[in-house]
Image 1 (cartoon, rainbow, N blue to C red):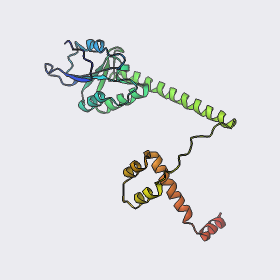
Image 2: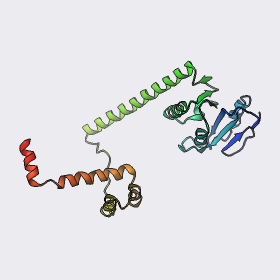
Image 3: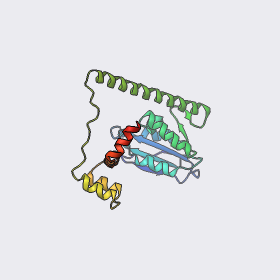
Length: 224
């Protein structure tokens, strides 16, 4: 089957093919708009649906990939021209293949001539995973070494502490008394989730410290 080339993300459906378990995924960046080569590779595969993504590799939100993941079911097969079209990085590839595997879906990459359900395909994914862990550990080790050197030279100061917002006491009191939810408190204060709960923990720690009487502190010191 020949496919029309268009300058937009879309889903191509071929109702002439009764086998709905065969699906294709195409991705081209906004720089390279030519999807023709990928569609050409699919022309003899009798694919029921092809999800075409027109988006930059820097974008983590890929609507067509998400819709494909929602569509596929156990026993389906996803065809791609090569792994670089499916994933933006080694970690991204491992995450996607793991999600597909949990759904009972296999991937066939035409360029690599690889089927993730075959022994060779499974070995390849294992090797990719090992390479990713190796790269990750090397990066973390270099970071640790760099921090150690910076500390020895007195240059490392860590992340700058963020001050509590001006409305913190008022909003925290509402949150503490269950008058508003954590999400609403975050929105009012303009804080991210991790930062908000970090401040909440500090408040609780401070409350515990201030609740100790001199007698309690003295007893604890005596026991020690």
